[in-house]
Image 1 (cartoon, rainbow, N blue to C red):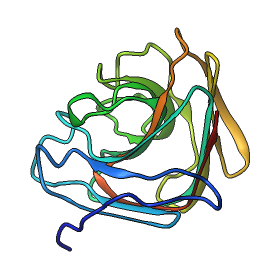
Image 2: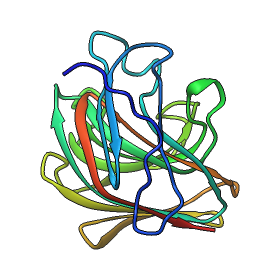
Image 3: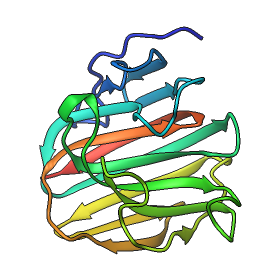
Length: 194
């Protein structure tokens, strides 16, 4: 599948939110946005950790909830998705606190498998010293809700809150949704906030 243009796309009934692609400055990749749907096929053959690939909405929130169903098709053992509900986008890369829902391999974890954990962008996945929380298998379609209110960020999967993280600061910004190592389709995307 070749790259597709992803211009602004409204998501969620009545929401005034649009998403545009980020990361194409470093590599071309397929990404499409439509009403309530975001699809991304991150680039292969490039360092998947040097740059980030996905969608960003500039609609600014100081409290935000991002909700969607996600289906991923892994290309290998190291893959995942992430949501930064209050981020900025300097230099075509998201910056701010994020929740990663990923598959950790044995070379990374003594308990390989799916986890959720907070990260601070652009500092990298290991810039926040919080133990990952075991999560349901990401290879099955999941309903995900990420909320950031004040200095707290929570993640719920399939109706069950899995983790709550305390952030060192309160941010305001737009929403970044990204993927690595897997094709990901986000449907029923809804963003609410203030």
